[in-house]
Length: 184
View 1: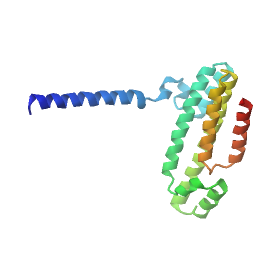
View 2 (view 1 turned 90 degrees about the vertical axis):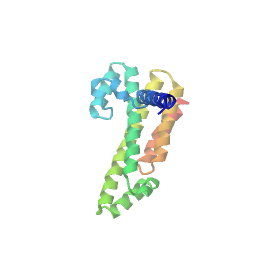
View 3 (view 1 turned 120 degrees about the vertical axis):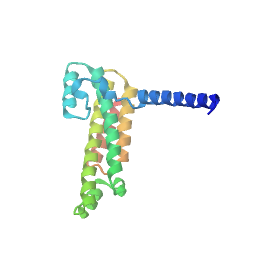
View 4 (view 1 turned 180 degrees about the horizontal axis):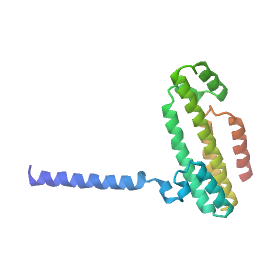
């Protein structure tokens, strides 16, 4: 190996190590590590209790930051559940149609698994909607940021549109639309 080739390989190695470190620092960073101890796992009930506690104390900045992280984490959990469901046509069905389809094949292992995953995904969507409503309320009431509150509600509405299998979907749409109309 010549000195020129060795230098080129060394330069490529240094560049790749540098890019890996940058990627790890910006993209693989866990945002919950910066939060308080009860919210190290942001989707836990202890974190929700902590958010309620700090909201009562008037620490809206911290509550808003935690709930935004909760929304992002719940979205990634929702994507995980959707990947694990074997019957992808369930996503195009309404809640009643999906329930009927799952009851028909509940005796099979795949049917049971899909049923539990779909119900868990439904609860995750509900968490996203509830957190989005709370975030928009804090943004509008406490920070007087009507634009951010509207953006948060529209994002929640988009998530709800993508998940037709959620029961009480129409009620959730009504609540989001009511909140949006109050912001105008």
